[in-house]
Length: 404
Image (spheres, rainbow, N blue to C red):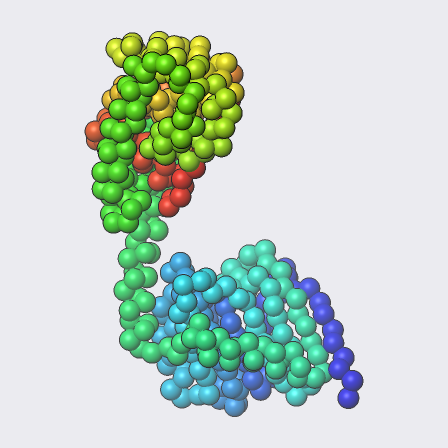
């Protein structure tokens, strides 16, 4: 018999995905369900229909994702109980990659009905959220077979593994911890967003996470790394300041070494243009090293006068040089740092600082604001503050576009 296929859009309006699932369960002989997240709110609404279908002889397989700890353990326990009495098998995701499908495939006497779209196995996904799926209904088993083959392949590749009480117990222990942190983070965010003026709650929470991070991006590792890099960068600048003779020879290699010691990843983008003006850059360094006691605004003005004539030598590089010379007086100013101040409710600076929109007075005020945040968080210097700003902005990566 020729395969006749009909496709329609399924959305959550007067009757949602959940209503369609209930209807299909009444006639289904087999069910393949693969979803990223599952919550009790959805299972409670479908449990009666699912039980009746299983008692009638329905064969079912569920594959449920555990990523981001959004699946509720109670759902897994209820489904696991059903496996003891009925032809239902439960699998859990077990891969470093995110398990993210939303497939509900039903085989019945007339062929098959397959729902593929955005709806997870949650109350929101099946009824309340703005979801959209394709409902494909066919008279042959071809589509159903392809879903089954995909399910089988996931099992063979151990992307999904059989659920057991021990697996669910282990997941629940981690779920509880993440759920607590989510609730704490939500309260902090609400408090921070409703505050008038500076509020350090959000940054304090990020700092707490950074200090508990034992990777190379965590606070302890970054503190040690930046301390050593800062010392070397300062030594290089001081050597440049007393250098005599031809400053262009080997300049690019030395400049690459310098920016490699700094922690604004975008500095390398302008290195070749800056290397075309080695004399001007070295003159700028010599000028500022000789005036090490200047306040932030005045020091900024000295370098700005030089950098104004060096293409791609922007505010990021300017303030990194100042910071390398004195990390207790001069704060790094770039997109990462400006975004970090915004997390404290301080939004007085352009998101993309450049030589046209930031002047000496702006930088002096910026350093004052950065000092307020540093003191509030109990950080030792602007180096630690910059590490926090980078962590908040990039997570595990770093980078910054250098603007003229």
